[in-house]
Image (cartoon, rainbow, N blue to C red; front, side, top):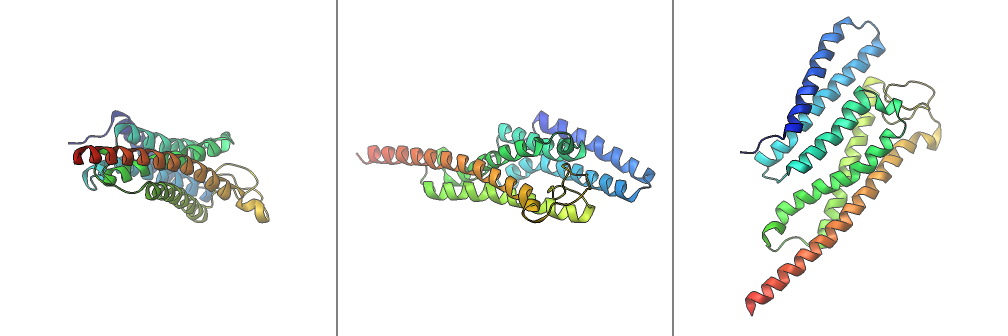
Length: 228
């Protein structure tokens, strides 16, 4: 039976403590703005707890192979984005935090996409699988779709909680509220993030293409030897 990694369990317990603390703290808040910020932090902490469970769901219900290394990488990345980035406001304290995370996220989502396609591809047991071109398109599309969904979530939460996740305001940081950008500058953060996601996705997609092509050559060679 598949079990969570120790790292995932640790993150889940830490988020549970943060969640309980936030729920206890809410009744003491009088300011509407602070109430919205606290509510958003509780929402993201609960979301992080659900994300920790995703590898287990994939493995047990969908029978998709998520290795411990991939699980730990996914949990660590989401923790740095949701909990450190927003709840601890690293986005506001460190201007490079968002750029660094999106630079990594495209590659990480691409790797997860490759793990998924490998499971159905039959790479691990040398069955006839998908073509290298399909693998390239799948990895790129999966990774960029994940990045797009993230930007949609930021757009929605900005509207619901009055935040600055997409940095359409002049100052950086999720909880900063100052003068908004005008025109094209208001799109900079979103497009910058998606471009970084695309670059990371492309890098992994190229690797997936070449690796699948190599496996295809090995399968063809083995088939020819069997025929001989």
